Length: 527
Figure (cartoon, rainbow, N blue to C red):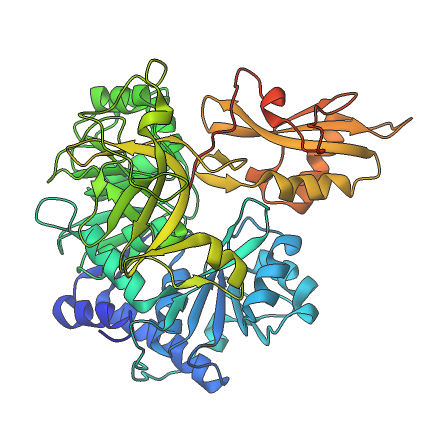
């Protein structure tokens, strides 16, 4: 296997006239799309960007994301995907740490890039939707050429997304051409007949996130299917697109499915064209799944994975069968097991899921660890983090997911507790420390803690507990606006509570379980 993009090149060769991308009523064939990626690749070459150079893509789900992604791979570059909801404060570290030379973004986001550009290695900023001060318009950036694909080895880095550790420090995840190719291939075979050239996939999961990138975009394009991106989530718009274009594959996070069934005209929706509904990002409430399936024909199949695993490691495949409440079986080519803190295997139960309130979870659970061709090579420039993330046993390198679960004798896995402290809201990960660090910079905040609280739509939402400085005159709305100005919208506290003091242990750690309303543990949801 060579460069990941050769999978797209093979699809172009076989399905050249097929629709590759459908967007806002227009269609782009595979041949046309390949030409666009070539023009982008040629533009990078012209500017001295080549093998191992980083190109940051700071875009929502629009066709230029796909062009820049595959064009970067064609020259052997490394894609650094960035959340378009991020502000200057958040992208600054990603750009400087990755040493990205080029940023591709929207004109409205260019000011965030130029604000931090002097602190980074960024040489070129490209605006995909027109002119912007400090950026070159995409039409002017492109070069009329069709360069060859640069050879890359399986273990060369292809994509470097960023995720946060429990400390909130963003970490670059090094995913190779082999990692991503193997996982896109595995994802494409999880449904009967696999992903076919006549399949049409709803592209509403963010492409900067590994789930949307691998399981939806790449799995579709590598098999000749059509990909229909949506820049933002809107239940009515998404369902209309499914109905109008007769889309066949839908992937989403639980909040999306919850939004669909709670629309006032939900019973009128026609999803009969869909042959697979996949869900991940966090555990879907059983009642949401059941109500969705009462309203519509397709069943919902839950999966599990992490950015570090490209992402998918487990799935309730229609081929293997499903078990509601389970993350499914380990996908082909990947190994997983449940281990104790001493890395001893935990025996499976007879059949799951079990009643977690009645069972002695200590006896049947452990940490889920995984191994396979999809697992990252490591975090970029963080040897200590890599040492903690992996355990080698009998020649096999196991990745620690940080998630606690159990398995049954039929091979189904179940997650019962997630990585400590992390909040998952609407499928996005929020690490409290990042929000807390910002709060501490506010002159009216003496002490602060952030925790996840239950939210009917998002699963969890962010709540800030603040001890104000003496004589401080600050309101909840002022705190929320302050956070919105400096952080992505989904990270800002939806609720703010002022308290006299925070409950702490004798070593000074905040006892967040005492802050949670109606919750007595610290369980969170993994990516």
